[in-house]
Structure formats: C-alpha cells, structure tokens
Length: 88
Image (cartoon, rainbow, N blue to C red):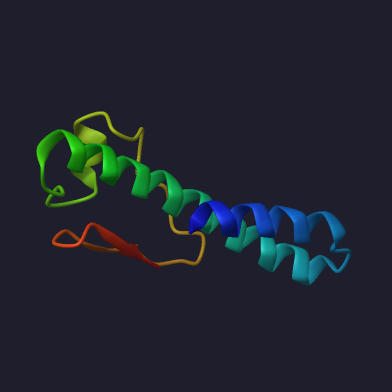
C-alpha cells in the first residue's frame, strides 16, 4: 500500500546521507503521497456514486481533491476508470 511505502521511505530518508540517493527517494516519496491522495479521492467518489469517475479531473470538479498534481516522474498518471487504478 502507499501508506506503507510512505512510512518506509520516510524512515529510509532519515538515515540517507548520499544527496543523489536522497533526491531519488524524495521523488519516490512524493509519488506515493500523490498516488495515496488520488486513490483516497477515487475511493470516496466510488463510495458516493457506486462507480469510478470517467477521469481524474472529475475528482477535482466535484471537490474530492483540490487538484491533480504533476507526476514527479514526468509524464501523466495512467488512470483506469473501470478498476479505479492509477499507475505512473
């Protein structure tokens, strides 16, 4: 889960001294935080409507999330509206 990944990455970051590794870990941490926020919005939408939204933008339009953040890895998030899943 993203929550476990976030906790793990935060712990590893506290001990990491190499700047390059630290930057990579920070990018991964930010990615998992964004995915967690998007997945929470999707779950809330699904609970309210019984299905997933056609697009992630619907979560913003209907107030489930404030905005769709940029993917820290570059490119767009890949959203599957049938499963409610997101990949990067």
